[in-house]
Image (cartoon, rainbow, N blue to C red; front, side, top):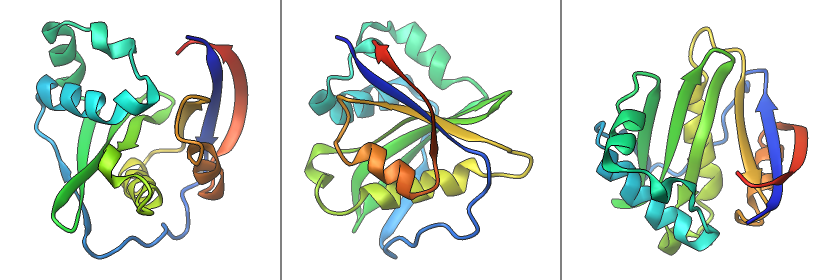
Length: 160
């Protein structure tokens, strides 16, 4: 399916990251393709994420076991509520995926999830954090990215 894809970047580390509730936590996930597949399905079902559903178990394992990939699971009030993947690349850190579980949408947690992803992405020596979003994602995704310091670098019509 075709959609508008918006590519964004942040080239300066924020002075202050937005505050998050004290009971909003993240934990580094073990490198296990099943964990990423389960979260991909759980978060992506509502937004028609389909490109990775055709991956084999071996492809998931290869992707997740890359030394450049980190997967973080977020929890709020003790319940898993979302996740994000960070991919370290030559040109910076890519927020490969970021999303909330369906039951966590509408609770004001998207900004907290992004804040935690940005804290993790901006490590020493990183000069750029980037991501893409599309017209099939949550309607608040793009405004949230822009409000938190990302800028649009280009928009394309196509499939991702």
